[in-house]
Amino acid sequence: MANTSPARPTALPDSVPAPDPAAGGAGRGHAPRTLLLAQLSNSVGDGVFYVTSALYFTGVAGLSAAQVGAGLAVAWAVGSAAGVPLGTLADRRGPRGTSVFLALVTAAAVASFLLIGSFPAFLAAATLYASAQSGLAAARQALLAGLVAPEARTAVLARLQAASNAGLAVGAALGGLALHAGTRDAYLAVFALDAGGFLLCALLLGRLPAPAPARASATGAADSATAVLRDRPYVVLALLNALMLLRMPVLSLALPLWIVQRTAAPGWTVSALFVLNTVAVTLFQVRAARPVTDLESAAGAVRGAGAVMFAACAVFAASALPGLGAGAAVAVLVLGSVLLVVAEMRHSAGSWQLGLGLAPADRVGQYQGFYGAGVPVARTLGPLVVTTLLIGGGPAGWLLLGAVFALTGVATGPAARRAARTRTRPDGPPAVSSAAARP
Image (tube, rainbow, N blue to C red; front, side, top):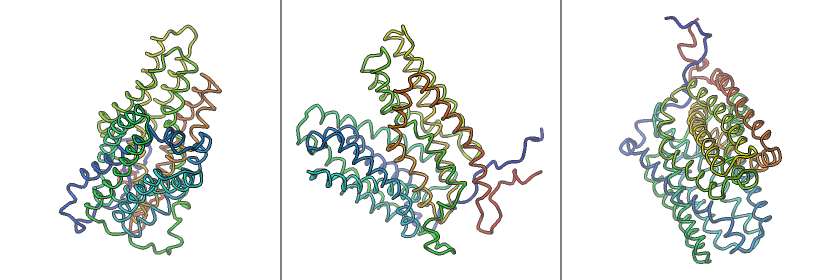
């Protein structure tokens, strides 16, 4: 039967070329495995850091909770802005060398945490850490784009995400041992482990083939360094993605506070839901990403994620219904958490395909630096927005937040198609599929 629906792009534009076979072809087949091992090595350290950092900075380094909160907020704000110039550096100097350099800088920043004894020193180390982390994420995306064929990138990114969650779980367990010991030496040991993870990451990334740096833009260095900021369709898409990333503090901050303050569920439910999320992503992220292969499937994944997030928020709101006992509250929270992790996996897959596939070939690092800024923005502003909305607004706040996710998911499709129409192939015409060109 003929397709009578309105013409629209159905595939991602060829804005990012296939990898150059001449650049280190011998090791290219093993690139996904090496990238996975690198991701695993530094995510173990990240898990340690997330679990122990707050108590280390306050209990060992002698900082106040207010100083730690303010310092990390400033650090991640600077880090989010650093992603674009550091991504541009990856485009110009090559993504492998830049990735190795930024992994080493991150290791040095983590090691410097062992020596801090004042707020200015903490602020400097935290800012270096956040900036290097943001730049490393952008450079590694550019490295992946240079080594992995376009049709395989979303699947590889799904495996990296699964490895990341597994590493975070291992790191969190090691961090838990340090918390149980509660000694200065235990904290120093796990921070040293974190730094070692990034050193191993740098070593692994250095073994990969080196894609050639992007060709210089005809518009000039100064102009190309800020090109992403003038690409309005892509900017809109990145902003929508940042709104969807408000799901991050829902699990890490809003739910723990909600469970303790508003429901009859026991406190251990917080840990159980975190484990549920981590295990689900580790086991099912690759499967969830398989249907996402082009622009339409990616936009559909994000749209579906928004709808499922609305359902999850409605279920979480219901967990505080009057008369709901502890067992029933736990059951409702588990249902909401299942919906939350389904939405997370679908959004991740769609987001990767859109953000990487719509980046111009000569500015993958810069565009990924800007697109990836949604993560530090969500870490910086998300806790304030989510806690104010949910803890202050109660069930109505959950429904409002869910509506934001649903509307954002719906808006992503038109924004992505508009961005695709503005992409250009090397010879100039708009990058639309042959199906879209038919009347």
